[in-house]
Amino acid sequence: MNDFKIIRNDLISLGLGKGDSVLIHSSFKSMGEVDGGIQTLVDAILDCIGSTGTLLAPTLSYEYVPQTNPIYNHVDTPSCVGAVSEFIRSMDGAKRSIHPTHSCAAIGDKRDFFVCGHENDETPVGENSPISKLPKIGGKVLMLGCFFGFNTSMHGIEEKFPVSYVLSEKPISHTIVLNDRTYEKNYYRHSISKNGFDQRYDRLLNVMDVNRGIIHGAQSILIDCATMWKTALETLKKDEFYFVERRVTQ
Ligand SMILES: CC(C)(COP(=O)(O)OP(=O)(O)OC[C@H]1O[C@@H](n2cnc3c(N)ncnc32)[C@H](O)[C@@H]1OP(=O)(O)O)[C@@H](O)C(=O)NCCC(=O)NCCS
Image (cartoon, rainbow, N blue to C red):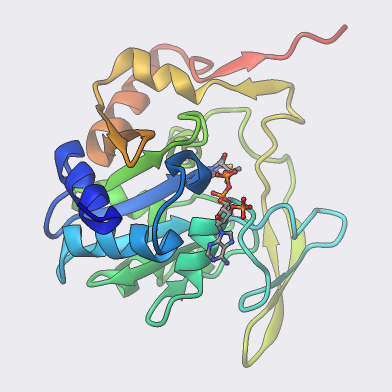
């Protein structure tokens, strides 16, 4: 069997199917050698979800848009969260949501539903973020070969609750450079670390079931977003600090 078929079959076994909207967090190297590289992985996902499906990737850019120089160029600022996300962002037909630090790229049937409107938010994973829209239409998150804690949806859940530790106290002005115009907009940043906490989003696995499997050698998890949001919000109601750990300073 060639790598395309192996990956597609592994994705189906994990629970991905026709019409799915799926956001992928990934470590491509965890898959080992893949004939055709990232293109083969993306082709297999697109084949699996079909023409009614939508593939999304976080194209987060906080590393390139620091608070000390908060300039985001919608076309040129790359993703800082892996080669697969950068690959999806640059595909023909893909569109990126407008956000200085927490944009996402999407390709497929519901692309515009996901990416449009993010520019109206003032926080990283607010209600118009593509990530916050996933649970509304039966979307899924695929963690492919990477640490489960790198699950950006958890920030959306923290913002929605809202927990006290997630956002900066004040917004700061960011420069947004689009193809046809440049403007200033105030954004709150995520400030969990500055507020004295470490993320423990891996604890979600203590409170909900997920599909686990191997995709071309990579340990992977597929999460149903509606269940994740509901379970995590209920968990926060019982303990606002369940998904973080207070940092112990020496
Ligand atoms: C940090 C992280 C991305 C590192 O994973 P990795 O497997 O080491 O690196 P990548 O996924 O970027 O894959 C790199 C490989 O992609 C391939 N690649 C890189 N650029 C490419 C390109 N332009 N075209 C095609 N393939 C490319 C190469 O094979 C490269 O390996 P090499 O550097 O040995 O040549 C991963 O551990 C991780 O954390 N992923 C999740 C990130 C995330 O979603 N975070 C969100 C919350 S903060």
